[in-house]
Image 1 (cartoon, rainbow, N blue to C red):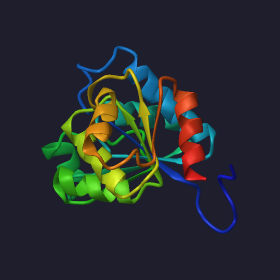
Image 2 (cartoon, helix red, strand yellow):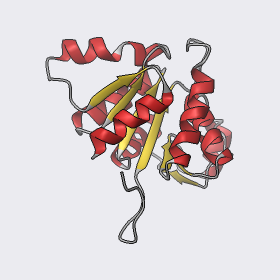
Image 3 (tube, one colour):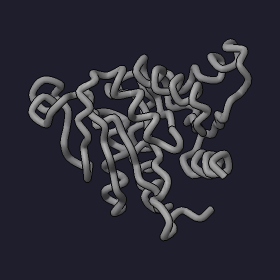
Image 4 (spheres, rainbow, N blue to C red):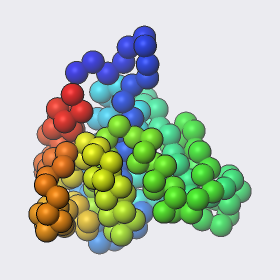
Amino acid sequence: MKKNNIFGPTYKICVSGAAETGHCDPDAVKKAEEMGREIARRGYVLVTGATTGIPYWAAKGAKEEGGTVIGFSPAASKIAHVKSYRLPLDYHDVIIYTGFYYAGRNLILIRSSDAVITICGRVGTLNEFTIAFEDDKPIGVLEGSGGTADMVKEIVKKGHRGPGKVVFAKEVHDLLDKVEKVME
């Protein structure tokens, strides 16, 4: 798949997941970092919710691989991002301060992405998943990572709306390969 060309930017891949990872599979953080690295290796831009946990570790992996990371903050300013929300600034090239709290930030985050990767997760991750599903975005779910990611198959099945563009895999490389095929 051709990722970069002179006529436009590369694909933007969102990594969505738990900001608090205590309930995630023990390998979820390591896999989030690897996902960030792999997104960067493939020439894509990583997009996150500019938060802690899974998105943070994905951003770290992408930056360590020399990738570009864009964050969408729920806060209205850098000061609020750090002081009120207590969110990190590191591992991002640009943070866009939406001022729309979490639900509004999630909508902008997903709508600004070409595909979404779900790793572990809680209710906010489920919100991001449902936005992506309703928008018919390619979605990759890392099976076995815990939380929301491990519930998605059943949610989609019981939703009676068809499979959408959701793909599943247990390994980072396999999942990103499948997401690329759905984006073609």
